[in-house]
Length: 120
Image 1 (cartoon, rainbow, N blue to C red):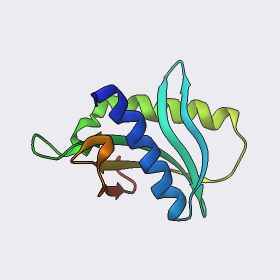
Image 2 (cartoon, rainbow, N blue to C red; image 1 turned 180 degrees about the horizontal axis):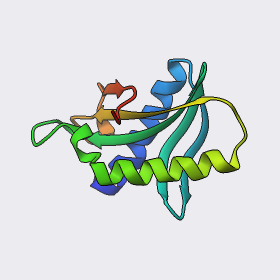
Image 3 (tube, one colour; image 1 turned 45 degrees about the vertical axis):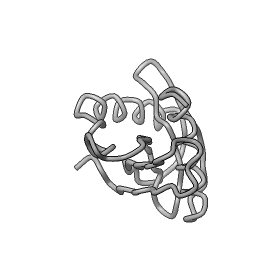
């Protein structure tokens, strides 16, 4: 398993987690000139723009630490473009989902840490 395959696999785990917790997935890997958003979902009064970070462990750093200020700015700009082309009155929220899989794609126990409203 390499890092390139861990990312999409982690995004699938995060999407499954969100669905199990009552979210509807609207888009996966939405991209435009401003950037990319891993998952766009909705639940209740929120439209959620979620960044997914998959790692084997947090030994080097927690996954959320890789969502830098610059990355946040690209996600915010991408979300603005998404909202400008999709009607709705949902409140935008920016979440990070950390997916920890100690054995990569073969992990039997995956830990997901859902950080709501992560860009504050």
